[in-house]
Length: 491
Image 1: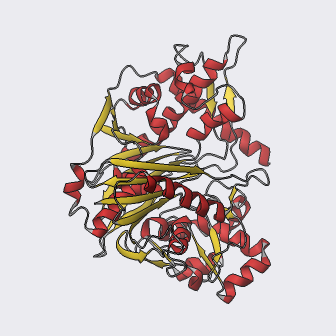
Image 2: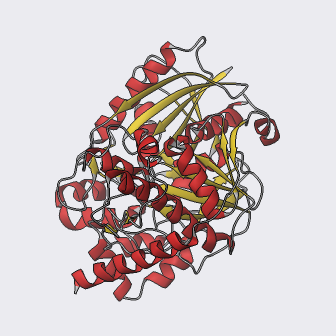
Image 3: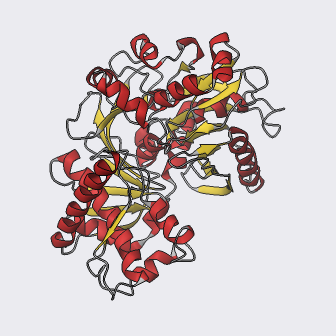
């Protein structure tokens, strides 16, 4: 037996066929367009996401020896997607999680004194990152679309619910707790949509999807819509919770970091709702069919891998993202250069949506290699910031995954900065693997989590070496300056 896992990320869709021994038999990938209509705005065309899904799945299935027995889905979270319930066409582009246009709405709600109550109910904070303020913005700026929502003709959801609607030809309008808990509309204690929050953000509750468990019988693909296949959709989770599951972080205290467009550090909290007063988020990791929920503490860093992409696409300093390691290794350190990649504001633990990127310490002797190395160091520093406030110090082991985790220099810098071992699995695409594991549990491919543990394999363990605390102090100073400059620019 095998599982088809769909990973609908921020820049493209990956599809994997995963065998019952946890190995990847075949893979497909398709990028889709990014739209930046105004400074700080980031949009996707939902139809592009769907077409990329069909293409990636078609490629993966063409390389599979047998047809998979079920489908699992994981997705970029917080992105607001709307679609016509009848035609499934999107009336407007999706507003992506990186989009900062709702900073003014967040400020308005914060000044009105709503943030403590919102945080109490959701475990989150008022920030443009989350879905609800994006919907508020649409209500205030796209009257015709919002009229369709009020009439019941247009559905509201996140990427997971949009894909399930497309896969089932509109038969299912559902989401799961891991995605719902990222919207600012879900109550951690109640485990459902909160009428108080829907009223605050102006979102009709009847437009929202039904919340279902993370695995089990969630829907059935419609052959006419999905490559001629009728398969059970039996697992779904937001990308970071899926990565936690894919890393088999099933015990309380297990910590993972996914290095992607941004980086996301999650710690398993078990069944207890633990709230942070240090800039971290409390979120649902997953929910069983029996209703048992596991929670996680999360530190969301907005720009890490995207900073390397900026070196490539924005500055032309490198030809490919993997080239960053070779270039950075040509110098022993950053030569005092510090790069704070606040290209879309600062996430955890600073939470300053108005912050902007900053490069300091440039001299006549600075070369592209110093800036490239400073970028890798910045990623390690950002993760250290989060881990230290999350754990009160450090962790015995950090499980690493995501595209940038293939960079050996970055992983060693991370181990050095944490003073802890960093473990990289043999399969680094653990986001998609987590979706496969959830779907396989839901469809009976695997019988238990302990069975899944045996499929996880270590590829390399990076032991910590000497820690450059002076470089880290320069980083902390630069972050403070970034925020100060950002505040000054808004005065």
